[in-house]
Image (cartoon, rainbow, N blue to C red):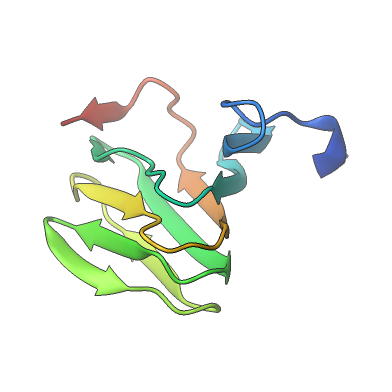
Length: 111
């Protein structure tokens, strides 16, 4: 059993970005907070599938260069090798949960 409190975890960029809640041994999962004008950056994964669940905001997500407008409550599951980016082109903060499996921290492809 493992217990973690989200308030004890830190965002990668200080007050925004990726915040890992649990890392390994089988999954990565956490929260992404995107301020207006921010992006996750286009990337993919060789073997990892990634799921996003949007809690707050209406950003756009690009999957293999196809753009989708997100609504709160939307979930997207991406297969390995699917290029993706989340772009907050709105004036509001965006908050979402991500889950990556299997746990392969070095699996990222940057474009």
